[in-house]
Length: 343
Image (cartoon, rainbow, N blue to C red):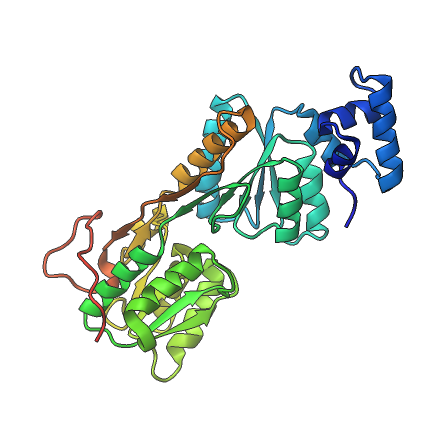
């Protein structure tokens, strides 16, 4: 691994800011101190990087955002919430989308050298690079990721709401279920949703890979699923875009929703309310996630607090028409009752 400015500072017995001033000549440094820094640089064969020096100087008024993709209403809502608060705090926002990009590590390091702190979505940045950024003193906030040392994390509650959704569907009498979502290989939001529904439905539900969280991928996965024998009676989708694709697939195949198959989503984007039938879903506070992330990052940058904080925001089951008929038409914000375990 490359030698960092942190290691040079430790070897010389000075701060990383002093190392930066000694190497760049941007401030007063005693001759003896400069000599110790240069000796440490030579012994460690250190090559100054833009990232390390910029972090040492702390001279920016910008925040960075690293998302896997910026397409779709979920990312848009989070970004709007973040930008609104960042603007109030006098900070500009620099955005990096890693979709289709090579050299992601280099791009993230370059961004880190231009900003005071970063918001990172989930596992978009490899753990090894996260560790390096933490070691260099970069202020970090993560959305939709499990707690980790040295950084703030924010996420919406998933498992309990997923259990309530599954119990509500079981209450309709459905017995065969499918969960449409991208590969669930880490402790991300969708994996928690899958664990939540499976804890209630057990072996009555199967997971189906959609590759991505898009209308197109939801359509393709649902069409193949609904054309097969023994098709599910209810499809629980990882997000609303996947669910909208499932609605389109059912329509193409001539299946009534919810008569032929029930469909549910997650997020409660605007299109979920206006779909026909209106989509039963779980509402999460997307814009509030972004707003809280901006405030949390500002607290870390300005030194209001040093200790990382881990927050979980409440979600809400919203019952509409796509999951089945109800004796009394529910209001748009109807809350489900206590979950019942499928027997």
